[in-house]
Each structure stands twice: as C-alpha cells, then as structure tokens.
Image (spheres, rainbow, N blue to C red):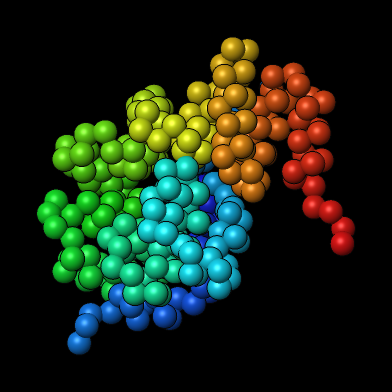
Length: 271
C-alpha cells in the first residue's frame, strides 16, 4: 500500500467515525433534491493523521449554538475533522450554508462516500454559481484519491486563476505538487497558503517536513521545529504533529526534548 493510500485510509476511518457520531443519514437527507540522522517522512500533509478536535461539537448545546462561521474558521486552521463535523451538523439542521455544502462534498470525496458525494454534487450543481469553486475543489480531491495528481493540479490551478490567493486552493495545489514529487514548488504553494491562513496547521507541518528532507542544515531543522511547534499549538490533539516534532528534535540533537514529547504526547497510558 502506498503512503498516500495508507494516510488516506487513516483519514477516511477518522471521518467515518465523526459522521457516524453525528448521524450521516439525516445529513444526506438534507442534501437530497427537494422532490446528501533519520530521514524525514514525505507524507501527504492533509492526510497524515486524525485529530479529536470535533469532540467539543458533540451534544445538544453545540447543536444549538454552532455558527456558520465555524466551518470556515476550522478550515482556516486546518482542523479538517472539525470542519467536516460542522458541515454535517449544519446540513442535518437544514441550514442553507454554501460553505457547509461545499465542505460536506469535499469530505465525502475524501472518505469515498459515493452516495453522499452524489447527493452533494447534485445540490452543488443546483445551488453553486460559476465558476463553481467547491465543485472544482471536490473534483480535484477525487483526482488526488485516484492518484492523478497532474490532473488534480490542473483543476487547482484553474481555481487559482479565478481566485488568485485562495488559501485552500493553494494548499491543495501543494498537495498535488507534492504527490508529483515537485517538492520545491509544493513548498512555495504551502507558504503562499500561509499568507492567507497563517494559522493553518497542516501547511506549517508540510513546510517543516518538506524543507528538512535529506541532510538538512541545523538552521533548517530549527526553523522546521518552530513551524511544527506552531502546528501543535493550533491542533494539540493531532498526534502526527507531535511525532513530527519529536523526530525533528532527535535530528537536531535535542534528544531529551524528543523523549519528553514522546512520553507526554505519544505514549498511551494504561487505564
């Protein structure tokens, strides 16, 4: 199994858990038509591990108080599971929020939920005006899943031709470039994404990882450590970020700190 496929599988499992908790059947009904030295790893950043940041959304209080801005705020921080959960809740409550519909479609594409994806894309076709931002992003994600990063990249570039500095499109363009082995260009895309979304944890993690492949310099490792630290502060529940930070500390000679991180964040405690 390829690294892309493995980490896609991990995200799919996480998102499926989220959607099960929130009741996907209701959400799909809302979408239906009126008549749903150690070498650094080179992983696809968005798919490099799940988070538990959706947990505060579960419960009646959260259902009553969830604001439409939650989805876009979660996206801007790279809290992908939280954005998916928020979109699912809003659609289950029949809130007519385009961002929620678009994010739900992207989530369905990521977890390969063909029924939900079909319903979401059909509703997007009815509701989204050209140039169909979310429809294009969803199609690009599908092509990434099908291991066609060159075609996916073409779609993301088309979106950027219409929305030049769009952070989400820039992030996905970085994903496509990385999947093609064009890491220099991918780093540039991730950094451009951070100009619009300075708290996007996956982009910080991606830049740190891709700038320290091979025999990285001491200064490059320190910069990567700082970027990964920022990612852990934005999304402290993501174990993949802590693992990356521990590995970078090891490579920088900070072995004591690496051990402490693993003990505190990566060691599963007995009940």
